[in-house]
Each structure stands twice: as C-alpha cells, then as structure tokens.
Length: 112
Length: 114
Image (cartoon, rainbow over the protein chains, first blue to last red):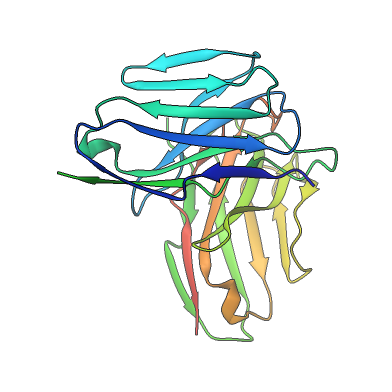
C-alpha cells in the first residue's frame, strides 16, 4: 500500500534557527496536507497543496509540493517557541482507499 | 461552531475488557474517521463512516469496530482489549470525506490498558 515517509523524526533547534521537514510518498499524490500537533493536543490542519511545484506561504512557514507530486517540504524561518510540536504530512488513500495516510511526523524541539 | 467532541477524554481498562468511544462531529459534517495514535506507529487509520455506512477500513483486527448514527455521531468499540491497544484514539470529521478535504480532529480519547 501507499507509504508516506517523513524525515527527520526529531529536530532540535535553537530559537531563531530555521527548520525543515521532508515528506516522501511511494506513489504520486493528488494532493498533500500538512498538520501540526502541539504537545498534548490533537492534529490541526495547516495547509493543502494540489499543484505540481506549488509553493505556499503562511507567515514564517513555507510549504512546497514537488514537481513529480511525490514529495513535499515544510520550512519554518526563524523558529519561535510557539512552533514547538509535531508536524505531519498526509496523503490521500491509495488504490485500496484506506483513509488519509499520515507520515510519522517530525517532532520539533526548540531550545530557548 | 462547536468542534469535534470526543468522550471520554481518558479511559483505563484491563486486558480482556471492551470499550466504547464516542465522537460527535462538527455540525453538518457527515464523514467521520477514526485514527489510532501511538509513539511507535504514529497515526494509523482505523475506519471511515459516511451516512451510517463504513466506506473504508484500515488494517486492524476485527476486535475494532465502529458505527455511525443518523445524526452523524460515531462510536468505535474495541473488544477483548490487549495491552497493545493502549493509544490515543482520534476522531476526525469532514463534510463529505473526499480526499481533498481537510480533517478536523477531536481532542482524542487516551486509552490505557493494564
């Protein structure tokens, strides 16, 4: 079945440093979604990318969808303590229609 | 507009027991999905319901079941609990469950099996 791999699993940064997480799918995706889960919280939708090569920005967050629509990245510029959490990418189900497939997430830890 | 509501928030059960978790979706949302979240496996899809019908099912044993009511509220049941069932169970709702819709998650039910 479809697999969505995400790296790194953990990322420690100093406050103010940049952060990037990468997502790779074993199959071409019609779209990709990104979610953020704060410690002790639940996943919250951030954004959806649909077009090949698409780039979207939300303040300090930049999301990219690869040309082949098999990979994506999330880049945070000048991290702040409020960015702490786990960032997940998720792709639509494969041919077996088994629900949105989530990567295992990247845990962002920020040291003040 | 109220968000997705899951009850109970915490549950402690012993092996062999069964448990029922409840989820009330956002008003107007007809699709409800259930996910199991563990530190080792991440978010894993359990099943999705739309208009009282299970449309999709993940790779979980038959001990995991669910249903959806006419008001779109959903329940999931786990029978004969095992230690490995300890996890955060998340419910998510969307308007119609199409693959380009964003999911709205509830706060989850933290299940501990002793």
